[in-house]
Amino acid sequence: MGIQVTVDLVIFSVQESALKVWLVKRDNRPFKGHLAIPERVINKNESLDQAALRELKEETRARQVYLEQLYSFGDRKRDPRGRVVTVAYYALLPGDQAKRVSPNGSGAAWRSVDALPPLVFDQKRIVNYAVERLRTKLEYTTAGFQLLPRKFTLSELQAVYETILGKKLDKRNFRKKMDLLGVLKPLREWRRTGRKPARLYMFKGKKFERLKDKGILFPF
Amino acid sequence: MGIQVTVDLVIFSVQESALKVWLVKRDNRPFKGHLAIPERVINKNESLDQAALRELKEETRARQVYLEQLYSFGDRKRDPRGRVVTVAYYALLPGDQAKRVSPNGSGAAWRSVDALPPLVFDQKRIVNYAVERLRTKLEYTTAGFQLLPRKFTLSELQAVYETILGKKLDKRNFRKKMDLLGVLKPLREWRRTGRKPARLYMFKGKKFERLKDKGILFPF
DNA sequence: ACAAAAGTGTTCGATATACACCCATGT
DNA sequence: ACATGGGTGTATATCGAACACTTTTGT
Image (cartoon, rainbow over all chains, first blue to last red; front, side, top):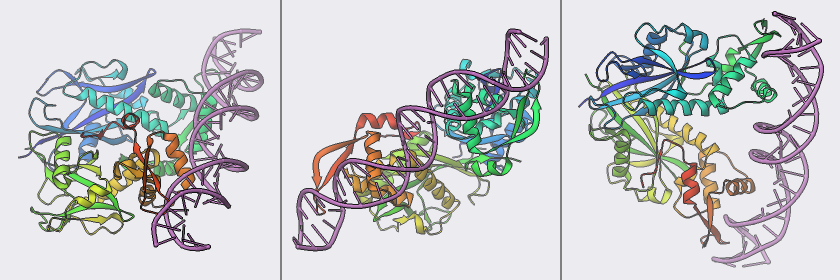
């Protein structure tokens, strides 16, 4: 009586035009040393959300992160330790913050979802499930915002969508849609890295709040 | 070390033009005798899905039931027993089968979601969450099928949608949409209860399979 | 001057919405 | 004959998809 409950985290970021997942080398049994998504045994005085959030912070030191419960996995034989039910969450980490997450020696790294190494337990399934959910979400919401820094250009945003959806989008249609959604605030700032300077945008806080689903956490 | 894991079931049906939930009188502590949705402590050799399915069958003796994992609830103080994480599922039970589920003396009954009695723990939240999910699902899928017997008329189907969505729908547009979805097979049978006989329909198995989401279970 | 990415409108097809009358039957 | 729910089509608005050129800068 009493089952082990863990929280698994699929942490996404987009870097170098690829959708990446944060993988760590397990430092506990079983499968010590194998690649895995971060996992934490929840302790008795934290909620599931708190456990997920704490794990996320320990891994990334990030703030303002999109975090949502994904699904719970509880097949009988999914963990050789015995009965372990895991509640999976996924998080979207802005690219700039993602780059700051140090590979801290331990073999942890960002890996492209297109070329995942073998993962322990049923984590491959969990990651695939998260990728599907993310794609679905992008089709009908604006959640892609969360993978970019606070200020960004429309081309950068479009690139994120194209990366995750795996297809090219029409620039004019994309911009029209973003405009219609009405969640972008054009700034009086321009990014001058390319040739022609590109306008920067931010998300409007209020609209953003209203768009968020139940189930989405905004820790700050 | 080890946390109690339960499965909670929100079992829906539509009867007398109302969306109903199956409530039972708890026969265990805590809150013995209070109204609650069915709950089961999962045991070590069944998966979450199996636990949910088994609970569903024990409650309803039904088959061919739509069953889908809803969300996991794990707030610290949600259960006075101590730390209990629950994985909630919801099920859609055809009206005719629902009527056959016996109130078996124990005070269990179908209750309208519009007038829910107080429930134990955070189960009100769970039920509300399930209702929202069901509404969302009906807006963009055909899941409402599952609340009707195998053969049904278009008016019956429309009534189910109107009940759950809480608004009137246009008959012609509704039928056009159902037709477009292409999942209904018109039968050479008519229901002769009203004045003019109404044609009966079934769902096409193959199309239906293709429409189903990941996460939906068809036990048979 | 030219290369490179930024920016900008219109047309067309598909899908959703609004809306009203005739039909087949039981009483 | 009439009351009841069954059944049917068209016009309009809205949304998504396709499509190409000009602008601004750095080199």
